[in-house]
Image (cartoon, rainbow, N blue to C red):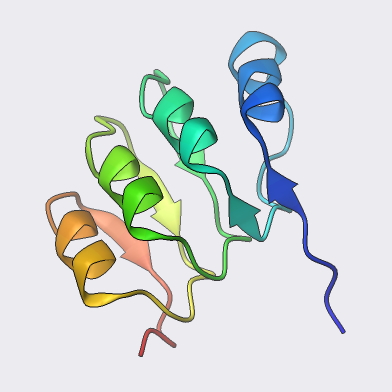
Length: 94
């Protein structure tokens, strides 16, 4: 069974300051998504398997390249929000 790894605000701030691999996280806190939306450069969040509506709204405002290839499920509202952005979505979205 896969281990759940949550990308918290503290970890997002550390990524923005020092940079490190954030592809391993399977979930993201809303506050972390808001912080990452201000990042300059690409965001590879391919480990995320789902996200809630608020996190999707925050990441939809991100202006760089956004990769979310690990997503397997999103609500209709989250899908609508992310549709505003050119993102790489997982093929298993239901």
